[in-house]
Image 1 (tube, helix red, strand yellow):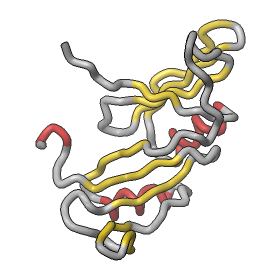
Image 2 (cartoon, rainbow, N blue to C red):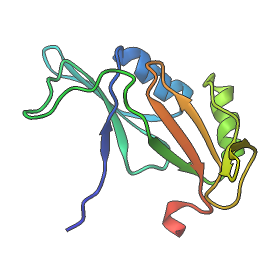
Image 3 (cartoon, rainbow, N blue to C red):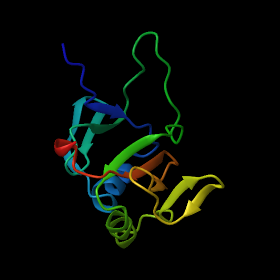
Image 4 (tube, rainbow, N blue to C red):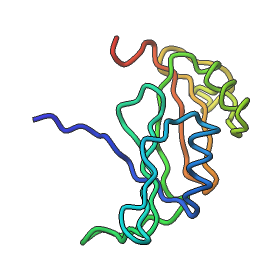
Length: 143
């Protein structure tokens, strides 16, 4: 049986503001934006080329046995691209405050590209949820 990661919940304080950030500034595709019950709204967006989406919601109580994440507390989300410099240019041109391209080495984080799999940039959404973008040597379908 395959276990596929297809949707990650991203905790936000303002669904409209977050939808606009991810759609307009990050270029994610809006898959759905629906009020599924009175006061319960779900917005699902997918990064270009990704098989995993993010979901923004308001009005949905935590599932039994789970606790709610506060807006801005999700970190470690990672996207992969094949051209980190072009990805940074695109994000910055869309108004995203993206970090410089960096790599990690003996002295820690250093600006500039690194070797294969060792070039990164980062940004946060309006609530402070943290994203990392990593350069991959080829598209996922080719790895």
